[in-house]
Length: 305
Image (cartoon, rainbow, N blue to C red):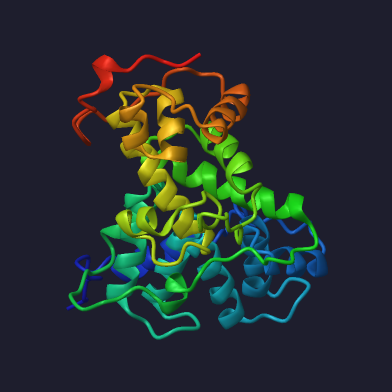
């Protein structure tokens, strides 16, 4: 009797299809146009696009010796900087065990995280890996993401920060343009900035605010950004999207805004609000009303001139 090909285990075939798609067989992500030395330098600075392009070169052996371990490391660095395509790639890599021990539990975590962060392509792959208890994310995703303090090119560092802002600000329902204007005034894009009042990092978080929003390392730009975004999102709800009041509170504290029934009469705070609103001209901003009850002082607050 002639045996029939079983149809109950489609996962291996789908896994290889997923590998081909997720690892860029169509060339959608990594374009092979940049010089390797330039890519290496840009990757050292943490530029996500360079990390992806260089990872693809090592993956395919294009202009460099093929090195899956190096390629995986670069994809992981890109994933740590918020790139969901890199998360998806890592998930597939762990699913088949290319350069790492195969682990479907880790693969499911990585692909699931890509789905949670809005990667539509990841959804079609998630059903083909098995979730397992006890699995943990690769250690490289937990390493500090830092822009070198002595970067030879500040504009490049700023570009990388802008990519982080564009990626994460929408996750916190905050306009990226407002965040960029705020960072420019707060730290001038210096991830190691420290104020006389010990406000730290990109978004100048004081230790109490960092602790309040779960920031362990204020000099890690991604952690700092997420903490600052969480605070801005909270302030937007608390002051019902009034941009000037939110900025004043970010600078001087929400208690000061309530106490003075508007922008406090501090020269620093008023200049701060004026600087940012000269760039970001929207007076109101959408907010998540369910996040926190609005300030009880809002009805008594009058905007200072």
